[in-house]
Length: 492
Image (cartoon, rainbow, N blue to C red):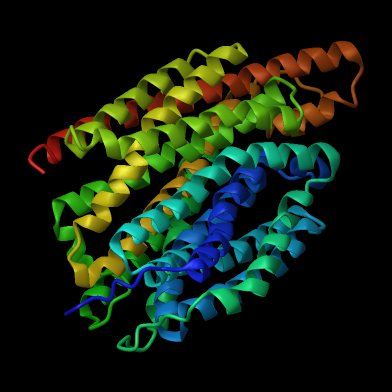
């Protein structure tokens, strides 16, 4: 089969600039939300569990919907799906910004996750179809990936500036002008692209892919926060059973949502698992650091945003340099060394007390994970046969999203469980302070100076201990993954 390699012109490059907008927003939105969490907790009176769900539910439903939305886009057209998703994302962002309570915000964030799942698969697919020349296509995909990294870098700055001047809802309204531009220019600059040979959309698989994840995560979160209970075990069993049904169904479908044959390749399966676990610890630590800066060090959102920018730059530098290094050293070794560097960074984070140690550890962690993000993604897509490249790309998008959501949920729950355990025997003015540090900070603002200082000292010390436990878990996990990658892929 001959593939057209017509050079892209000004129209395609302008269209690429439009496609870069949702890629930028994808990472920027989560970073901004992390900074907004303390303000949300104070304004809506949200518990620590609700605050975790406000962040988690977006990533869970986004990752759970990616494969479904990708399959839907194959059938109705990628541009059409992108524009439908952009309109829906803008609308539910407004609903989130003006949510009257924590429950309403969680629902709005869930809808944002489902709408967001239409953006990245469509963006990558359209970029590939617009740039058929191999060299230009490499540049175009690089622009999309750089946009995602750029969102991580500028998100803290933009979010901090907004939250210093406006209420927490402004963090969600940030998406509206981006979606308006996409809706205005997309029909003119982006071509339509669909798979004419795709079969019918399997709605049962779509439903199973969504509902298998949430019960397991809920059960794990409850165990971390309240210990082993019948309710938490039942939730994990139900979710695991639904996941088993989903896998069985994919094996029997002629046109499955997830091509399980891809996991028979060791390079593919190890790289996908590495992506998921690497982003697991990265997102979990980023969430915790944003809280640490504001609630322990007492920074404003803008100050916290400025201090979280250096670690984001570490990711960009690491992911940019990795492909060049991989020309001289085998990619699995580059990934393994990078993960080892991240493990050292987490060891540094177990010693945090001052700001310099915290930021140094975060930069080392991010720089070490940058090579993994670039090279593991390339290994996932590159190890798949050409006819299954689309399925491999969908998995490479879903794995880090799901891993990151789990990281925020589980590492956040580790911090919460440690905090509650230490404050369970402490004498505090109100039991609400035992639930979360944000509740303790809000209570301290209403107390006289002496009891406020005592409460903050006790609560912040408990949070820091929980942060150290989570960093220790992350260090061990990174070291184990580094060893497994180098060992399992030593001949690849």
